[in-house]
Amino acid sequence: GRQRGACGRGETCGGGGEAGFTLLELILVMILVGILSYSLVYSSPTSAVELSNAADMLMMDYRQAQMLSIRNGGDYQLVPVTASSFKVVDGSGVAVKNTTDVSPITISSLNTITFDTLGVPSSSGTITFTGFQGSTITATVYSETGAILRD
Image: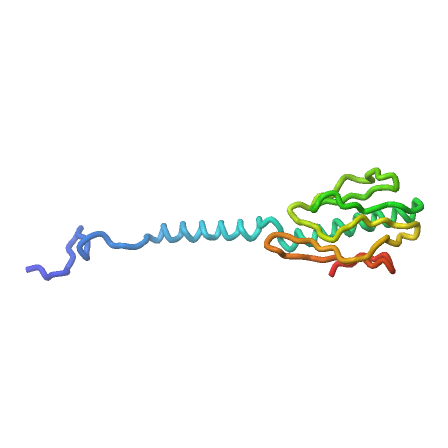
């Protein structure tokens, strides 16, 4: 006779279907997890690179306003437009170039900076760039030297 628990051809063991996942199902889940992880890491609203780029753009516009003031006799300004944008204007308030928008990054402590004929800024202080989940980069304006440096 037949022993109890022995499985014959075409029969399932254990009194029903086996519980578990097939290799194909496991591979598909791993691929989906990988795709989701990649998209979260590389498409986050603000990575460190985007924060760095925002600071660099502000520093370039700062230097442009400074150089225009030296070359053209002063009164060029770096002006905040929104919490995420700024522009360079001449003494009459006319924009020298299009507004630079660094959304979704927010910029705090940026007040209008006016440059004199020697390129000296009207104020000094630290400008903070804040990105997704509170990550920050700062840049400091030094009125004594006119320099702007990223910390």
